[in-house]
Length: 55
Image 1 (cartoon, rainbow, N blue to C red):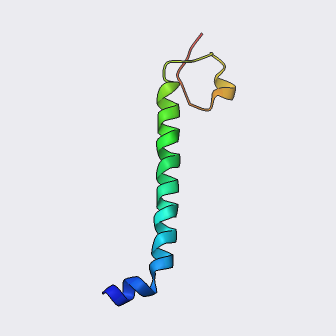
Image 2 (cartoon, helix red, strand yellow; image 1 turned 90 degrees about the vertical axis):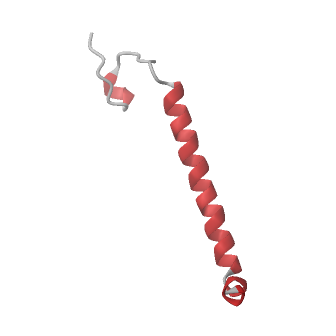
Image 3 (tube, rainbow, N blue to C red; image 1 turned 90 degrees about the horizontal axis):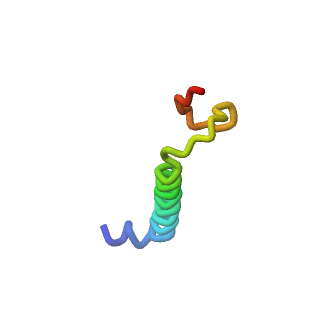
């Protein structure tokens, strides 16, 4: 078991770094979306959030 970990240490570290980067990116996107909640300009064509704003 330890021999396998030692042989693949670089791969394990790279995968861990990539997973951390993806996790941080997802967290940032969720936080950004929540901060914009309730802010609608009424321009649904350029919004991209699929809101149901009606004039």
